[in-house]
Image 1: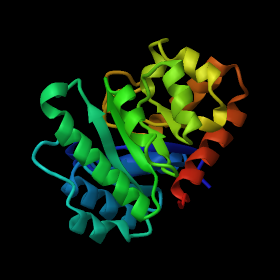
Image 2 (image 1 turned 90 degrees about the vertical axis):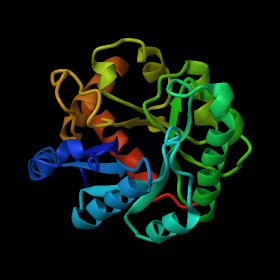
Image 3 (image 1 turned 30 degrees about the vertical axis):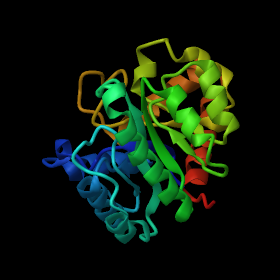
Length: 253
C-alpha cells in the first residue's frame, strides 16, 4: 500500500533520462506510486514499459488532444491495453487554449470519442485533459452512461466540478494549489472522496520546489495543502486520496 499516490505524471518524458533511477529512489523514500500518462502512441508504449519494470508505476495510454500528427489507431493501442498495468485511457479531451476551436473542434471531438469508446470497450476509466473546454467535455461525456474517469489538472468552476462528480468522475489537483488560491473553493466544497492528487510532472512543481523540474515524490506537498485548505486532518486526507486512486486503478465498467 503506497503512502501517497500521484495520479498523473509524465516520467516517460525525456526530462528524466539522465537521473531516472534517482527519481525512482525518491518515490520509494516517500512511498509514492504514480500513473505515467501517454500523450501519443510512443509515449504510451514507454509508459507501459516503465509500468512493467517498476511496481510503483502504472500506465495510462492515449493521444493528447493537441497532437495533430496522430489519430487514435485502435490496433496499436489494443496491443498495449491488454497489459494488466494499464489502468486508464488518455489523456484525452479538448484543448482550445493551444488550438483554435472553430478550426480544430471536429478533429479533437473524433479523437476524444474514439478514446471514450475504446475505454468503454476495455472497461477502463479515462484521464481527461481539459483546457478552456469544460462545457464541451461535459456535453460529450454525458452521452456515455457508465463512463468514469478523472479530470486531470482541474481548473473549472464549482458548478462544473459538481457536474463531473454527479457523472462519477473525480477531480485531480496539481502543485498550483500550493501557490494560487483560485482552486480553494472547489477543494473545500466537493467531497473528499472525489479528489485526487497529482503532480503533472515534470510541470508545475509545488512549493517549496517551485521552479524546479517536478517529480512524483513531491505529491506529498499537494496532499498536505489539500488538508490545509479543507482544514481536515492530514492523515485522513492522505488515506482517503490513496484509496480514491486505488479504486480508479482497480476500476472495471
